[in-house]
Amino acid sequence: STAHIGITGLAVMGSNLARNFARNGFTVAVHNRTAAKTRALVAEFGHEGAFVAAESAKEFVDALERPRRIVVMVKAGDPTDAVIREFAPLLDEGDVVIDGGNAHFQDTRRRERELRERGIHFVGVGISGGEEGALLGPSIMPGGSPESYASLGPLLEKIAAKAADGTPCTSHMGPDGAGHFVKMVHNGIEYADMQLIAEAYHLLREVAGYSPARIAETFRAWNRGRLDSYLIEITAEVLAHTDAATGRPFVDVVADAAEQKGTGRWTVQIALDLGVPVSGIAEAVFARSVSGHAELRAAARGLAGPTAEALSREAADAFAARVEQALYASKIVSYTQGFHQIRAGSEEYGWGVDLGAVASLWRGGCIIRAAFLDRIRVAYDARPALASLLADPGFAAEIGAAQQDWRTVVAAAVGHGIPVPAFSASLAYYDALRAERLPAALTQGQRDFFGAHTYRRSDREGSFHTLWSGDRSEVRTD
Ligand code: NDP
Image (cartoon, rainbow, N blue to C red; front, side, top):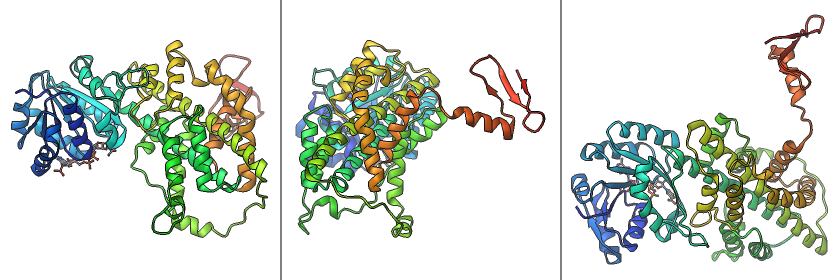
């Protein structure tokens, strides 16, 4: 029993995490349902560090120092429960079971409860960074008991990505489902970031008349400024790529139907349950959905669109600069909405998530890593109770400086018939929050008219109902 940590489930993520632990000096017990994969991993990468190959579950748990740390990296859903059922009877009180898969946080809460009754710590860990991150340093979002973090944290801090200032991209998010919840919102924000970039591309292509290669150059330039991020960087790579078979831009030969695995959908479903407006993220999920409806698109293809002139060369360059403003402003809104959702989840489930710590660990390793996140960290570290990122003086000033260009870009998109659901939803959120009066007053009047749902007044306390089908006098109902 010498291994510091064990990993069961050796597909791409599990194998790469095991190698990451081993390369950092830990002895790693490895196990997989199909033992051939375990043998193949050790045969190919055994020279990278100390591995203990275990063929059976019993051999695996016997190889681990106590209290044991077991990382489960199997397909999310029923396989995770099957593996827990198999291992739990072999474990002792105080052992730590870590689920590194993309679990739904409600499943994590249930599993944590069930294992806690047996004295076993269950840690739901969100891991971002894909295959490469798992190997070279991912961003890691663990949720579980403080005792489990005391045992596991030092190992995670070793294998995690490091931010530019050297801080490990991991920290204890809170109890039970907190880690998987934060990972879920990370993915929601990732959807929004990707959709916003896609809309910027679409505008540069169709309104500014830029070629994919020219747009790649534009993104490279933006990546040297405040939009500096992994997603902008890889977007430039994808746009600059030429299809070998046809010699055409790669982006022109790929089928334009975006797929999804479901974490963006979860973010929106949970946001609806919590009553959090994440309109930018929702539009990003719906945009993928629209793109995949081939039959609807075919049926609508002949519908009328606007007549709009292509821009002149100078006008196109000025427009491109405005698109950068619109993209940056919309990005601030996506993060505002995502952090609001984390705060709401944390309050609902009593997690005490530190929003500055979330921004800090997203600075490296994960898909949404960006220079921008350091600004968010600073904002929340300075004022942990900040109601909204838009209330941070720095972000308020930037979005204020961008808002006129943002409107011009959304208006141009509408004029040219280019769909910009995430740009426009983000702008609508901004305008709704800053409005002196919203038409929600009228909505309340309608609700009271047809359903006697009552309303409150802005000039007096209490709930009221107007006798709409009687003499239209007002009665107090509370
Ligand atoms: P997969 O999700 O493809 O899962 C394959 C692994 O699960 C194999 O080891 C397989 O064993 C095992 N498995 C499946 N069913 C069972 C079962 N009933 N009992 C025991 N083992 C089972 O692997 P990935 O490496 O892609 O992902 C692992 C987890 O990490 C998933 O939850 C995924 O969502 C998450 N994740 C993935 C990322 C990525 O970029 N791919 C990024 C972040 C998280 P066998 O070899 O015997 O079939």
